[in-house]
Length: 128
Image (cartoon, rainbow, N blue to C red):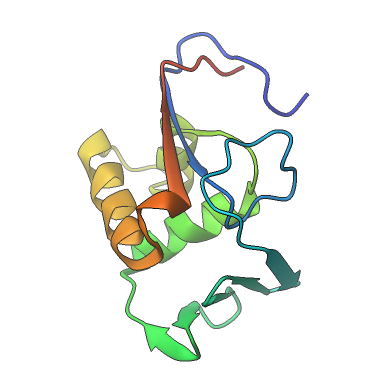
């Protein structure tokens, strides 16, 4: 259960290290610790405030577009687990047809803020 393989899914996004709750499952790229309250997550210099829809870095607000915030929240929700592109597209753009490029734009925006090592792209992985 958890990280089984699904046929037909080729690429997944995973927050590495920063949000990892199960080091044995992940492919760690960083070793930042995650602490959280029901609506707030701390990792490294960042605090994600779901209840306020805000991301802070060293206590200062970081500008995030709404879809980038939703993507970050979705990946934090599945911390330590692979998340398929289709799963992210369905969650971030429900009932809307969008191209994969829209997801890539948001992942790129998050990498610029969080650092390249915070989000790992896993290619060629089949998920259940």
